[in-house]
Length: 352
Image (cartoon, rainbow, N blue to C red; front, side, top):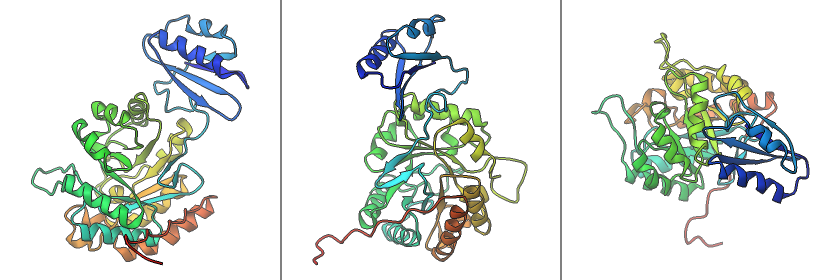
């Protein structure tokens, strides 16, 4: 249910509505628009006469019941597109954001070199896995906290904000001390205890679509995060499991405009995990931008043939450098651009 306030309603009248919502044991979510404020109400049970109750409050224009299962993630609760800042990078705005980096953090040398290379080529955020969910328990599963420390070093040396995966509720606090954005992987997209925990952590969350997930289920997973108070959620289409074996997954390009018709949240595309083969990554990246994606998250490695994970789908530095002008061209064709990466930080102790 949403309570739509009249334009110019005094804040005390809005607070009165919020107070009454909380007295009923429900949650109130304020959305301040350019002209008016909307109070979203979520929780159970919603009294059948709730709309009649709030219609008589001072400043209330009308009350609308929302029938969709996802409330906070939908346009009804939030009629403006979600836009937010991560270390100077605008997510969900006019520019297409490119996140790039290694699948796994393997060493400080590898990660810092990759961070410098992708930034020079046009990336504005760095990805890297410190904790890796692997199909086999015998495969490389990440460096753990040491990997997080290496990512922090790469951020210090390049100024790039970092995104890294968190796998369990018990790791949220530790990972949160290092990362700028939590990544929830496809296998954990319906791990609701984890979603609730990152929703309380006070940092943006990228939510990758599950392997066989309906779009409504994906949006409801976002709802778990948002219900805990975190509105800065990125939805990432990374390919779904189909009968096709020529690629690792099948990139659902249609999911980009479909989700955007249902939700105000930014939508990214992961062409690396969709393709599974580096020869196809560029084409899928361009397709995602042409479909209207707000950004890309891609895997880049100094020597993919020796990578400890996902080398087959990782681009070389040269391949990524050659792809970014094409991304910029497609972005321009659909009325968008690429943000200009900030300058590298000055080394500690540098003099003029």
